Image 1 (cartoon, rainbow, N blue to C red):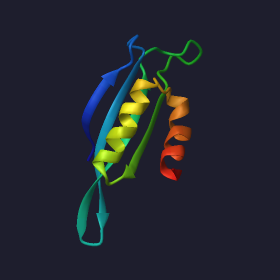
Image 2 (cartoon, rainbow, N blue to C red; image 1 turned 180 degrees about the horizontal axis):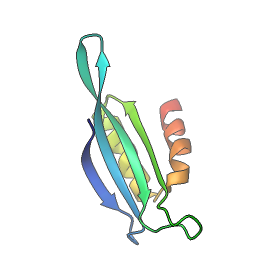
Image 3 (cartoon, rainbow, N blue to C red; image 1 turned 45 degrees about the vertical axis):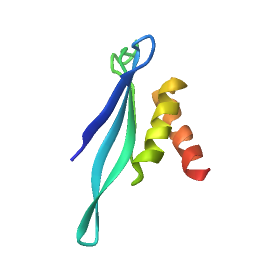
Image 4 (cartoon, rainbow, N blue to C red; image 1 turned 90 degrees about the vertical axis):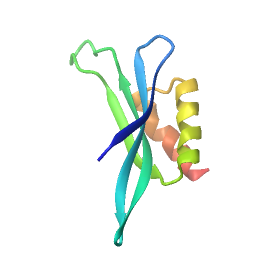
Amino acid sequence: MEKVLKAQNSRDNSIQYSLIESEIQFDNEKAPTYGIRIESLISEEKSGKNKKSEILDITTNYGQVEGLFEKVVNLEITPTQLIDVTEDFINS
């Protein structure tokens, strides 16, 4: 089950950022994990659909993902950039 912990729009309201909590099973215990979803609020001309990207289960550390979330929002990362930014975060 997913739960939105934080949501924020870009300065021009064209993108919505969400900090997501979900659960994964470790042996007999459930643990919260955190991820990020980015959704364009403006439909693409060709497809008529909104572009969306999400990476769930980035970490079990809320403080780490909250810091990443704040950077993503402040830099106004787009849905297509989310994978690269998250990979850089994990590898650092």
